[in-house]
Image 1 (cartoon, rainbow, N blue to C red):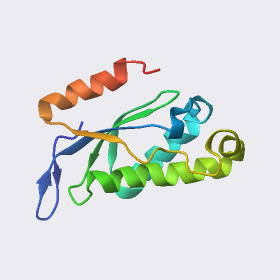
Image 2 (tube, rainbow, N blue to C red; image 1 turned 180 degrees about the vertical axis):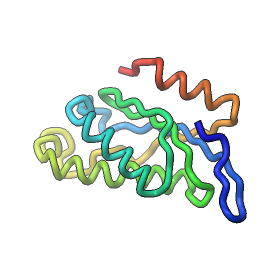
Image 3 (spheres, rainbow, N blue to C red; image 1 turned 90 degrees about the vertical axis):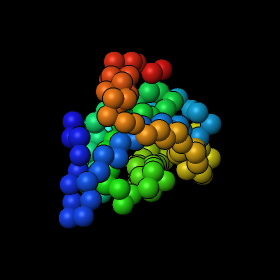
Image 4 (cartoon, one colour; image 1 turned 90 degrees about the horizontal axis):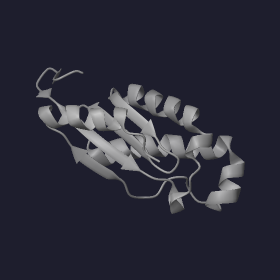
Length: 133
């Protein structure tokens, strides 16, 4: 796990634990888990983020990620949720029709927590070793 990111004028360690859910907390993510995993990793790479841990339960997502300090947690959440939600509903119109009635895939809100160097190991172990259903 990368401890510090070094840039021309900054050194940082910005690690976040995000959790978000589909609207109405529908248990639909098992059907699209592989695609969602691929999209989240692709989005993270595009913006220069590093995903340490990712777990997709039937009705929520956990991501432990390191980002550059130029990105606020709100921007990171928007990046991860925006592309994946839009693209998954385009690829799976049956989900939109049955569960989301023309609205987006994700609830507006999310949880975000920051970690220090000690707590980072605890968060990563929690996501890696706990099955969330």
